[in-house]
Amino acid sequence: MKTAGIVSYFIVATAILAGTGAAVSFADEGPFSIAHPYEIISAPAAGGDRIVWIEGIPPFYPDPEYCPGSARAIYSYNTTSQTKTLIRSRATNARSPDLDGDLAVWEEERESTTDIIFYNFSAGTVSALQTNRPQHNPRVSEYRIVWEEGFEGERRVWMYNTKDGESYGLSTGKTDCFSPDIEGNTVIWVEKTDQDVYSIVSLDLGSGRMFALGTTSAAVWPRIDGGRVIWEDGGLIHLASTEEGISTLTAEPACRSGAIISDNIAAWSEDGRIICSDLLETQTTCIGKQHASMKPAILDEGIVWVEDDQSALSSILYQPISSRPQTALQVVSCPADTSTTRGEQSGWMREGESAWYALDISAGTTQASLDFSWEDVNDSLSCTLIGPGDTLFRFTDSDDEVMDARIRISVTSPAGIVPGRWYCAISGESVRKKVCYSLIWYEYQVQKE
Image 1 (tube, rainbow, N blue to C red):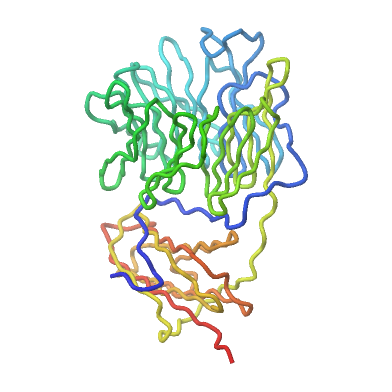
Image 2 (cartoon, rainbow, N blue to C red):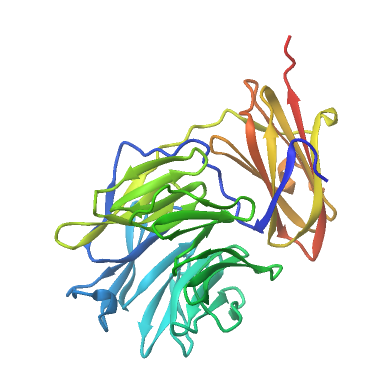
């Protein structure tokens, strides 16, 4: 049932991220060089406050990407502690790093094939996924790693679960499948469907549903975040989601590459500069040295990229994002005024799933309340409220001080809550089978005299 003020949004994997309501702007300080001029291989990987990249080890070769036996080293950098750490001192032809949480992954030549290597930051351990066929382009999300395996024309997409130690084949059929990415329960990849036609395929690991997000005229490198997929095709940057379909972020074709997305910020390299686009404010910012900046990556509080100098060496630069405005909102535990009901929604939830709803806040509202409940106290669900101005609150059953499979929370501001579209995301944290839930939304508005 749909009522005014609460709109069913979409079902995605559990990946709750803060919204960046204000246009992206950069701090006066920076950019900072975190890797002094060396030969940087591939794009850096970034997540949270960590950066991982691969450096060439001298002597350098004219074409190191294809030079047999080229020695490389893997480094990480923590932007909070400002420390650089050597993860692996020698890795033959290592490339394609990725990072999420405690895991970093990359590909590395070992003996007569290429294997996926993953590093656990907490344990300090390095492990390898070994098969009889070459493995390339790994991506990681929490405890899952995906990659492409096989030779061009017959590649398949696989997934490894670091919790149970099992591998799973994801792509089916006889088509060529490659360039995967993963976020929570959603895996995407590129599939060659015809001689000059490629599809971007999305797979829901929970339901097994598979569908094509869109088609391209060339092999691309799609990236997923927050349920949205970004890629470059024909010099244009495209963005797709299950809710909004496919849109184009750029007006005219140009020399663009390395498109990525994180939260509500998209970034790519354009004619040798880094373009950052705020997807909420539809504003763009250009950073980096002209004709020399490429391969961007996005952290929680900044942008990193590779920058070449005139000697053909390269370095990694980090530019912090300006501190975002603090909200004056207060969160209190209290029952809602049931006479001010704005909308109600209900459904079924399984572990690992999320349901998103759009909530429209009226001007003059001073208190907005959620009453979120589910059937069984033995199941654990959470509720995340995301609003304009980088406002994010995440609630669990204990946050209203009563463990009763119910969350009753009010957000208040005497000066008035920022009006407009807010989002509410509910997630199945620990669910035995499936559980029925109910979400009710209330508002209290100051009465004008």
